[in-house]
Image 1 (tube, rainbow, N blue to C red):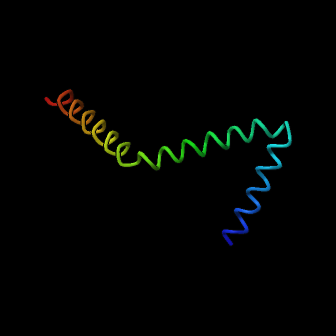
Image 2 (tube, rainbow, N blue to C red):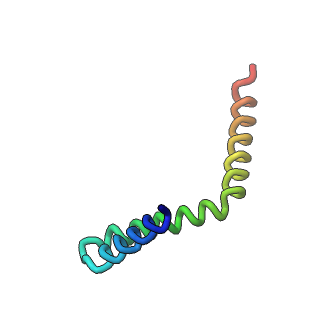
Image 3 (cartoon, rainbow, N blue to C red):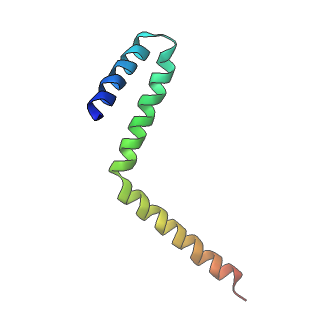
Length: 67
């Protein structure tokens, strides 16, 4: 099943590469793939950063709305 999907995916990417109209689409697919790989690679750092940011926002909002 996975081999079939990969084989057809490679064929589709090759067809997009040869078709000049498909170059814009191929570039977007490649950029999206790179962004996904970077997000997976830095997942822990990104989640920690967002958690710290949300804690900071929560702390500042608590001090702002305290009576």
